[in-house]
Length: 332
Image (cartoon, rainbow, N blue to C red; front, top):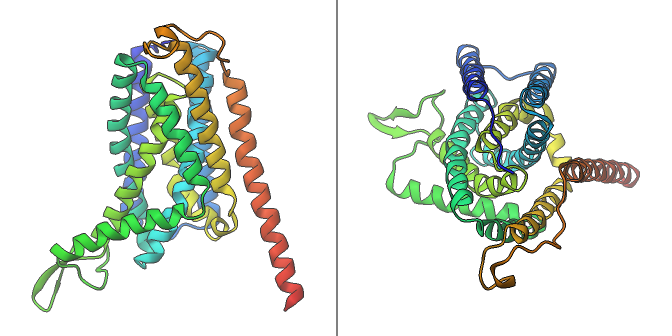
């Protein structure tokens, strides 16, 4: 089903969201600090409530189908964005980024992510518009990604890829050993160097690129509207910085979260396969005819799967962590 939202709503939404992002960036630049748990909680709640209000507006202005698809897309992207945080923690730790600089680093990472995802969204929309068989490719890719996500070696492989790029940069660019506040360039013994911030930005950019490749096919399995895809990504990424500081050490306790993310990707991959079968035009599959017996998975089933997957993974992680703490307390 092709969706069309009023042009005034799309333009107005993008203007408002851009203003919010700019205001958030200016606040960071004007008052750099380490946010407290209370401050982080309030910001996370603010962005979640904002996303729900946006879904309600879309529901009332354009219909239930629009609201449901945005809600599904936003929740999927939010789930995948939380998975980003694990890699961000590794990057911050690996490069020993000072705590007071981490807000700025994360904000730059979010801007990079929006640019990259915007490009992928436009590419995905063009492919879907002109090549219906691309859903087979998206579906296969998501199933593969889900299997890889479930493997414990995935995080280590991502880190190795980033290290390879960092090693390449160190070969050709002079990088100082220490940070110099928020500066990208510094002077050491009369010679100009880039600071380690450059490496951090590159590492985060590479991470965002990898996650964009995973997440855009996933959300196109829930909606075919580029506007919904893009706004869902904006809302998911806007609260990511505050969520990083809110969760903090809790991230280390969510050891089963990647299984929940993997199941969501697998489910959407299967859903894309079924959709591709309905839209089938490939001559070597069913003689180029649509495959009508393939089941259609509705939005409410998708919503239930996403919520339950994240809830089960989170609860299982916290229960396991609590048991390990009790066991360690008894042994000591």
